[in-house]
View (cartoon, rainbow, N blue to C red):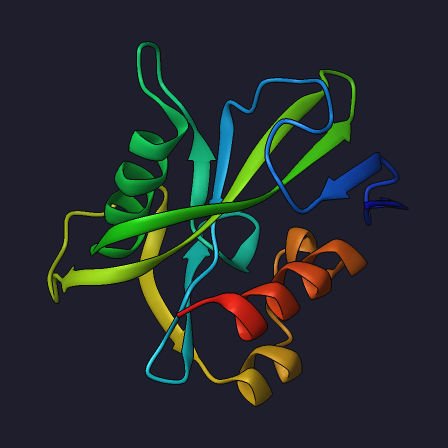
Length: 154
């Protein structure tokens, strides 16, 4: 099943649960995980609060990128990645993002961070009520992604 919607910046987005169903190789990543009843998020310096993620570097797999981006943005090391969804954003330069969930391997309390202010842990209620969410976190696709992790994630 493919869900289509417009994001808050007006771009057409197609979301599917599965791998490689949208005809474009994923080179961007998003990591959506819940640990001990709280979601792992980060505060991006420009956009606000969002799940960790980014773009795979040259020669890097999307799995390696998901691990690296999570460490760089939150100080959290993850393991046992599960790639459960993909979405294509039809912006000026269309791109495909692979969506992962994972388990926590370790948490660095004093990490060297890149582009963010570090890890933020929010309950469902806190995340739903948060007024500082990035625009990425406010569309209907993100609600579907959160539902999947709640139902099938660790």
